[in-house]
Image (cartoon, rainbow, N blue to C red; front, top):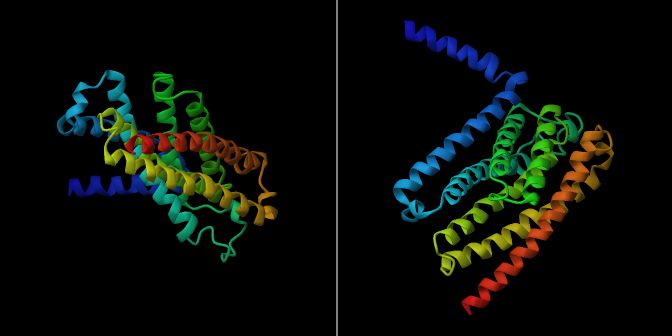
Length: 267
């Protein structure tokens, strides 16, 4: 009976506070931060026992190895959430008559964005802590723009559709991390490295180039609704995607150059 009583109290706490609509943003951010720590530790534990080359890495390499495990899990999570809301959910469908598309949100959409905010803050902290070992200024700009934009969209409920469109680009993160893992493990000349490079090229082209064309076209077709956003909403819809698109084009040039170099070596 005592156990049942504690169980009921816990259920009330979770329902009325942790997952009540006003608290979801804060709960999800804390959940994202906590998940980052758990995945980081699990990556370290699993790699220690099952990856032979892990023990021979330097301290900085092991930290980056673990950190990339965290970013991979986040990328899988947020890509799945983004694809669902952009292409399958009715929340942002033009067929819905429940208000302007630029102001629609739900507890689940806010929760997904909150988890992502927690990740961006955690990863940005790691980048600053070990700067520039985990990434240069372009990574600081990318994570700062992403974290601020996602946080604003989550708390305000504005432009969540476009936020999720941009977050689909995280689908390229696991492949980028795999490239680093293979390189660090001394498998740069393997077929796996070449196949992964080709996969990065096509996914980057689709998710970070063509998808942004789709996003800007969607903004154009719904410009009358976009114009009703607040000033930060304009920043979220116009400035951030444009800046990220420029960065994506710069990185795409490097990816193309690297792929050509790898193919030349194979030949």
